[in-house]
Length: 270
Image (cartoon, rainbow, N blue to C red; front, side, top):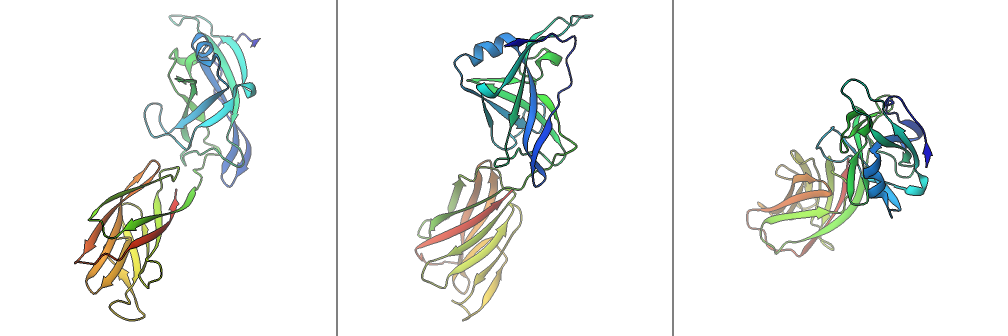
């Protein structure tokens, strides 16, 4: 480990190495940690995990963790100078590259992001040299190129129409979607529905052939509407957009009979 002495904490910088659409594919980041705490936590570890947040404390994590092998880290021993009432701080400065062209770093549109790093079972902030706090996150200076990337997830799930009205949680999306599109059908029948939902507004159209042959109708109640006869339908609408998917509330209009299992194909968008 190379020893370098600094008189004062340097500004935290990040440099775009590559881009994908509006999002840098890889960022070089710098993280200042309490030296003793880092050495203890890093013993026997093969990697560290960087995390980004939209606020200096709290908040929902931006994207997934960015895992970097310890063999790829550049670690410097450093000090801050004692002056006035500020004591000398012994720290390490870590340089690393997070993200890649295949897995770009996700940043908010306003460019405001703060970073911390998980070393083994311990989570550390990246602003120890400037604050003296081992857990203080450090501001990512990303405004010049920050854009929130678009993410999509294609998936499917099923719904047994013999079940009573209830909620269904759909997981495995990998992010909190902003909206979801649905394609729904009861296989080998003419029962189908197409819809959009952002958790607060829901729109759909559906096959109305059970009431009027060869016609479609506009659904005014939900993003999923599978009509079984005039005034009777199985309905579904998003009630929450979750960290790893979304939740649908299944209800009925009138008294629709059970029609077997619905196949719901979706496109989740962030």
